[in-house]
Amino acid sequence: MVAYSPRLARLIESLRRLPGVGPKSAQRMALHLLDRDREGASFVARSIDEALEHVGRCPSCRMFCEGGNCLYCSPSRAESGQLCVVETPADLLAIESSTPYRGRYFVLMGKLSPIDGIGPEELGLSLLAQRMGGDRVSEVIIATNPTVEGEATAYYVAEMARAAGLKVTRIAHGVPMGGELEYVDGSTLAHAFSGRQTLGA
Image (cartoon, rainbow, N blue to C red):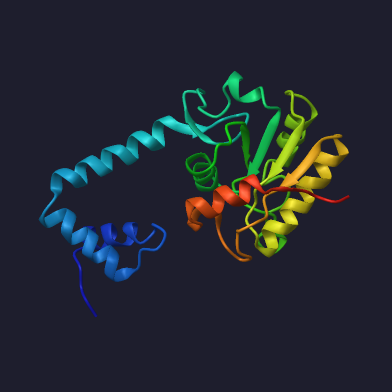
């Protein structure tokens, strides 16, 4: 078994918290930062500290923002009357970079999963209901991932939107079942978004 000094072990373990980073990758990153890029390591550490201190969630859409100035809740975005519901900030960014959509968003920060203790309150659905009840919303675009949990979440949100008398659409074409929006190529995502369909009652 490899033995590390206590602080090196802690650094490696902290890097393993990143998604997709296993023991070997974490070790390689830690050794690189300490051996070849200590200035870069300091920059990363400062950037993380500053982000933790200054980046919060928008009280309206729940996307990450600084100082209450959300880039995705500007008055110009309200003109379309569209509200796109996504699971994660990464999904929002994927839509922004690959489609012409420039309406408003609501970020669930997850999906319904009772087995994991994630219900409507954890997803901020009471806040979403408030957004649907006012704020010049005429159409709710559901862009949850096509997984079992994502479909259940889409159904729940669609029922909320219909109860509020709103048009409900769902992105459909081109996104594979079981896929994640974050990893779908841009042209496929753009096609899926432009080909969204109205959900049946």
